[in-house]
Image 1 (cartoon, one colour):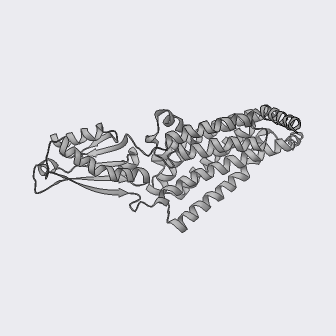
Image 2 (cartoon, helix red, strand yellow; image 1 turned 60 degrees about the vertical axis):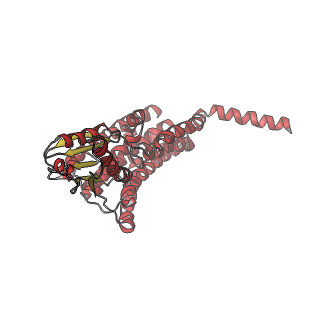
Image 3 (cartoon, one colour; image 1 turned 90 degrees about the horizontal axis):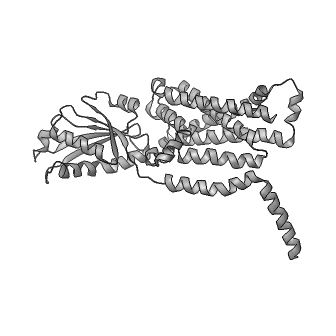
Length: 368
């Protein structure tokens, strides 16, 4: 019995060693997951971009500005004399908070009976970051008034906080766009990779070669049905989000549709590239899931702010398509931002899809 068992085990080990793709994925996946979860599961945020409005600069107001910029939590990206339209600053500079110091700040700070006030506007479209900022801003400014300005109680700073875009801090307004990005990526890439790999595995792909079809036509015919399916999924997500969670699109529906198609196109190109590498459906499945689900969830800003990631992972997030799509879809749904602000991430997303599609078609020709 032991001899027979040993023979079966040796045979199975030979199969495992010959199937090097599965072996590499099985051994590498735990390391990648530990690396991502170990660094990305950190809710600490740093260098949050903010702007300070200071209409009448003084020694005290400049000390406040310096303290804000020198803290590890904030990074002052600009100082404005007047901010008549704060929402435009949030849209144009992608800031997370606006500190508004009133003209009489210095005088009130030296008047015990009248506490100085600072208004802080917070971007509520990123719920995690907004919650951390709401809890941190008040104590931070109070500490600054005491330590930097060398005041003793009762001299205080009254902090008036206002949350924009998601004032009620509903988690659905934050997660629905993120779920749309993750679901569209997984479905588009996974279905495309499995569909073409299945043809290769069954040997039916070679039968298409005897037809007048060229590789580009074969690829286009295979992926167009999944474009339609992914588009239907996107509509379902938005419909359920509005019906059940009150998630309404503030911006242009046309721009949202075009942006979603660009993202779906990029995801399909990624799935097509996987199909040129994988030989079996199991291989395609094991490849697609780690390169779509994990990066979209951990490295795109879906759950954790990108500023909390190490520099290396922040650089890695630049090649994750969902990073750019989340910026676009949250801007359209929550802020009502238009193409004038979102054209850059859209252009990058389209460029990524174009590069992936060109590489996939070339590799597909070589495989054929």
